Length: 357
DNA sequence: AATACGGGGTA
DNA sequence: TACCCAGTATT
Image (tube, rainbow, N blue to C red):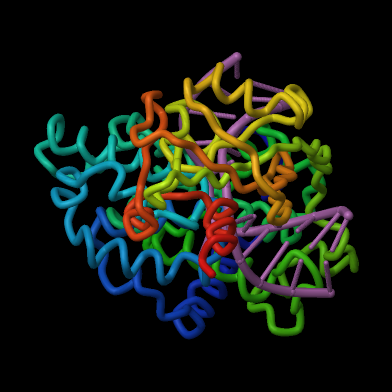
């Protein structure tokens, strides 16, 4: 690379200041107890787009339940999803288990330590690959996440749009030259830790920053203007009627979602897209779609649920059915007590309060 | 290169 | 509200 970004930049001094700061300021996190590649892997998957404080209890429960790679490989998928319930991006859990099973069958149960094989595993992209290689195997590979791009866009005063894929590639090139070969694990974790604790998105604490003297954005007083990130377009709202359907045995109808797309393999209360169907056609539509007769009851409440790319507006209705068995493959009838066995998205967990009274 | 994919926390 | 978060897969 013939880029001039690192000209006149004291890489060595930057490394030393960062590593020293990290040694004395790193948080005591559960996945930092050892370098077990499996645990590093689990933590890195959970931490994708998810805050440390959110991950901690999930990581503890997950590792208690699946202490080794083989335990996870042998587990039931629905049970794994139940353990992941509430953490979001559920394809992470399914991909992780699929990849772990591949490690068992293809690599003798040992997490591969070379970039090619590791990066070919489901759910292991450029960031996670670099994180595992550096943290678990001490290899000088870049692990560029949002923190790294923020910190380095400020330190090196780079104003490329960090929302664009090519910008991330640029930062990977830079980190390849910047990374400490002696301690790549601490370097990568240190720069992320700095982004999480000091070089924060808003109001960075430059006065506490160990690399302030090397920071070009601080020198020019533009640290608040970086990184440059284009805005995501805002979500569209999709209205549904969500149905709490009960039969005469006090069982509820729940539905397993499709194996593709949003919330795949998760369970929910049946939902009717009312912008397409219309409130007055719900009973007929339900008979047509699922082969079950229902009688719509009263509206119990409403719920707004915000995803990254869409907003659900749920009107919650009670309904009754005279069915003892559910006809459709997607539907089952369960007692209230059995319902907790199934993984539900948060939006539908919230709906349960409408009959828990 | 753009979009789908969760959910919670913050100012 | 708007934005952010230890991103990846798919198109």
